[in-house]
Amino acid sequence: LAGINCKSVTTRTVYSSSLIIECLVVLFASGSFDEIAIVAGGCDKNGQVLKSAELYNSETGHWETLADMNLARRLSSSFFLDGFYRFVLSLFY
Image (cartoon, rainbow, N blue to C red; front, top):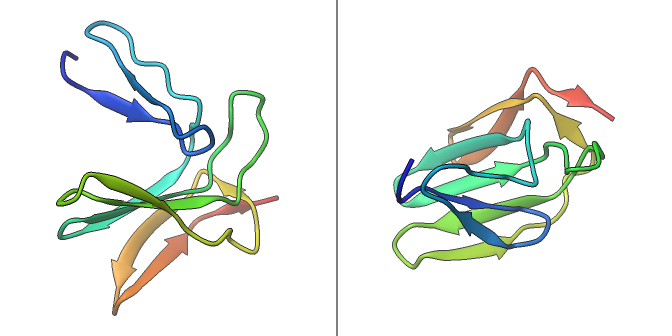
């Protein structure tokens, strides 16, 4: 696991460990296309279901906060199609 980083969507903190990785957000959806990746929803360390979303650009190495989704969701699957980031199989809260 050396060299793997984990970023918390809610705290914007990057965690790195050679043995153990602790993420503060779990059960989130993610999708990528070329240099762009989007992480959305999930649960924070207190079990609160999130409606936040962030975009990561691997060319610049920067994260950008996106507008909140209209519904909080976890256990989602997502993908890019026709220029849109789409969810399927979401549990809404």
